[in-house]
View 1 (cartoon, rainbow, N blue to C red):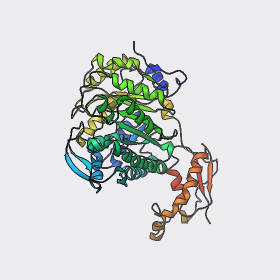
View 2: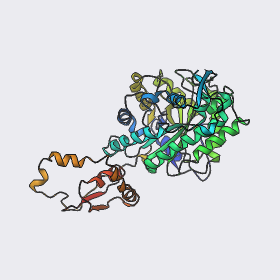
View 3: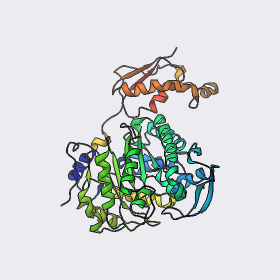
View 4: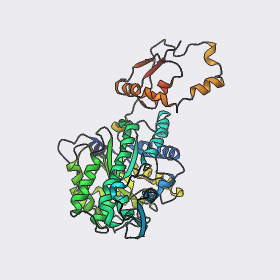
Length: 463
């Protein structure tokens, strides 16, 4: 019998909404909602946001920036970050489930404490992408319910992929500190209620499968300790998810996925051990509908506020094949959303449209409680004229005024940030904000990039 196990006391959250939507749907053969694992091989973050939102906006809770450009191949762009440091020298290639690259080792006489990574690039790209995301959300291109999704590798991944085994233990701590500093910058720059952070756990499963040698004795315990430690750096107001990864099937999973037992074990341990909500969990599935693969899902125990996404879709998939796998999974778990087994970065841009359409045809929109239907249009009181009906209000704006109005990059306007945050925390539907600062209207512009869906009136008062 199809079922899901929901831990007592948490049965009224999002997972419960998904189950209710599934039971009411006229077509229960479809998954509920969709999730993008991370990379989308398009030209820019803006193109990713526009294409993805247009195709799947009502099916997605979060949208990543696609990890475009040099980030397309997951962590490979971090290899030059390591190589650029003078403390490293290049050694021979070693075993790796990711890439057979020359392993890096510390030069003679150099300690791990001497390594200073500086900028890794994750914060810079995330902050730049969020600016575009916020503008598109303000303009209605990105749906109001969607958050900005930042995907980060666990520190185990670059260290195990790029560093010689004898140096991995001491350099893990150094790289983890650098990555957490990048995370801290993102948490400062992106509002908590607009942010979702996904930890990509790939190296962990290579260790659990015995394909990579661990530098800690209790592999399962060490993996869980690290995942839980990373999760605790995400504030409760920021959404948290994990991508449990075995690579992508297009280029070969690093082991044959015979069943989901290890995935379920780690998922249950995370769900039981976190002292904050686990908002979503992604698990891959092979390109078959074998009953034995999905059977361990009988034992999956998620909190009621955790969304589950199964990576059932593949690049060369058919709708019929995907629906067969959905049906097979549904005999063991209900209320899940759909995804691919991994990111799309190495698949080429020509596959994007077909993958988006595959997600659309195999999933239903999110529950109404998530999409928050209804009018979000602010209505001024009867008889109120927002702009005076005078000739000057319709005159062309001269060049000087246009130049003065372009103040997005003026650093001293950062003094408005506390005001914008206070407004975001206090204004409610139907409120009217009187802005006596007038001038260029930059406070209103900043607020509209922060308060996206609330029906609020803004009255600018200027001499």
